[in-house]
Image (cartoon, rainbow, N blue to C red; front, side, top):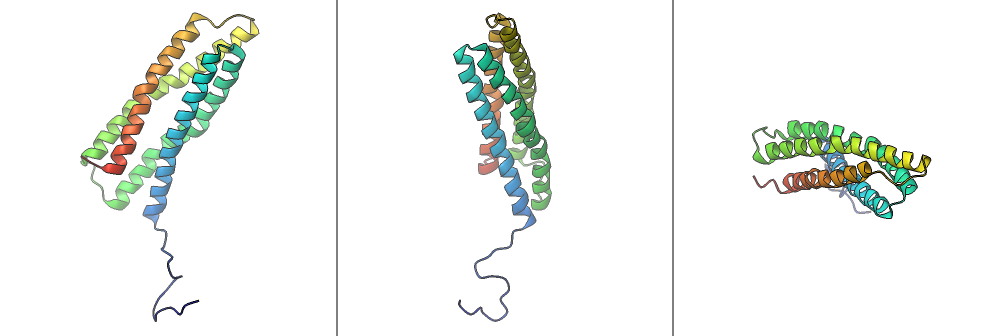
Length: 171
């Protein structure tokens, strides 16, 4: 090992993990969870739907509902907390346009995401009933899936825009 300069503390090359960077890490991890879970849920629901197999759809929707409650909901609730702590630690003003735009888009995402949860639950229940009664999926299932798909566009699009705003801070 090389000798350290007089007065040097800590290990050479090590940087202290500050509270700000820890919270920022958690905030970015939360964004990854929201985007990753949303993408995974959309993919698996779409693949199950394309199969037209009620049993497969029921099993997939059951898992999707659990994933949304376990991962997405947790991240969605923690994002504003970690974001607020980051604002406080960095003295960011509420008047920053990128921030107010992000918060508006967060509300839009939420307005589209909350109904989607109930759609997923109902689609799961309709698929289960079709399996139990040995019937085809009812028209209501297909109408819900169409609406679920359409709600995903502004919901997921808002989250993508928020991510860009957090990174670029263009406004």
